[in-house]
Length: 184
Image (cartoon, rainbow, N blue to C red; front, side, top):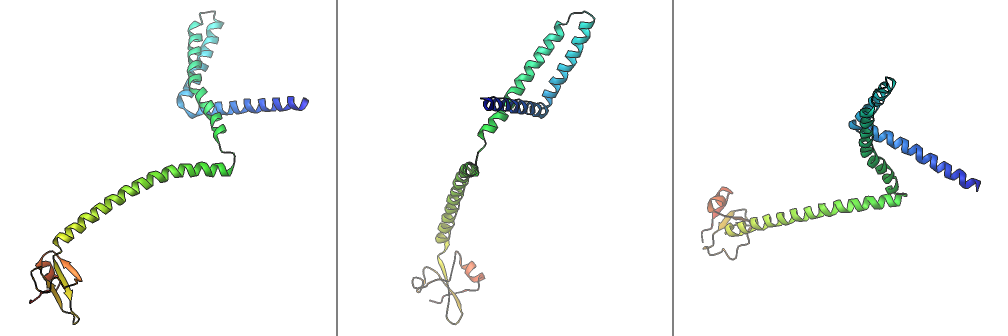
């Protein structure tokens, strides 16, 4: 029973210390929190002076209450966020790796989709280029065993029998590549 009380008080002390630390972190994390603390301190000082002089202090009390409410508005979600982060942290390396794999998996799926899209676009461009080449690749260039470069046009006698080393769209291209026109 005594051990249970010690554990309870130990847990409570750890909670209060962590709450204090997270509160300080949250206050420092944003300039408006610091501004609200300054307003509260100035209002307390003003309240103390007014009370000494036995004057009305309601304006100071209202300013202090509003500042505290605003500060709570900003700090409470921040503090609970720190505690929530503690709960969500993976307990083991396996869980951490699993969570990383899930994140990587989502990123990987996006990258895969983008890669597939790029691949499809590339294939489409290649098809278009191939169609253009087929449409204009009607001149066949052949290199004979002696090294002579000869090109054949569709109306030529050996056009159908020629297995081309190169193809050209125009006769000018074939001539500029060093080929001469077939005599037959």
